[in-house]
Image 1 (cartoon, rainbow, N blue to C red):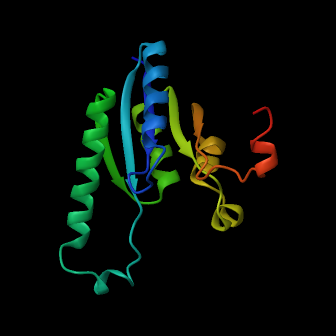
Image 2 (image 1 turned 180 degrees about the vertical axis):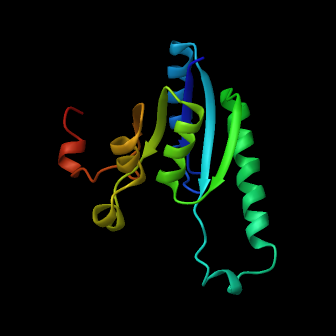
Image 3 (image 1 turned 90 degrees about the vertical axis):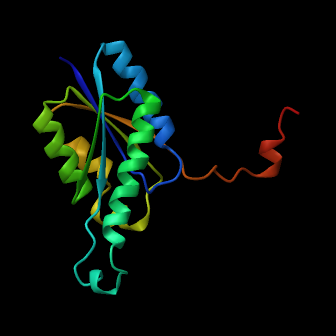
Length: 152
């Protein structure tokens, strides 16, 4: 059975629908099963005592609920929510299920990404299977008014 793993970030607004639609289209073309994965980054231990009681559990339940809604909307056969380092968990789960393809989102890099590398970059470098990165630009590029109005 062919498996397409689509890894999304529930916390990142924008891009999940585009990534899931891309994964859905690819899975249909491959006649493959579409599996959704969301990884919740671990909260640093030093921060946990300052959080309200039950906040982590509530956060996880909300993430699982949102992931299920997206999975239903895009016809995913399974929804998995893991906790840990996103790139590591994506790679581990892809190996665990023997995924044929990983589809994930990318975004405009931030300073952290330049220093430590992005999740997408680490997955592409270390995956056992092919990876499709659905590119998402966080903001429209600044276009000078004279260029934007050319041809009008």
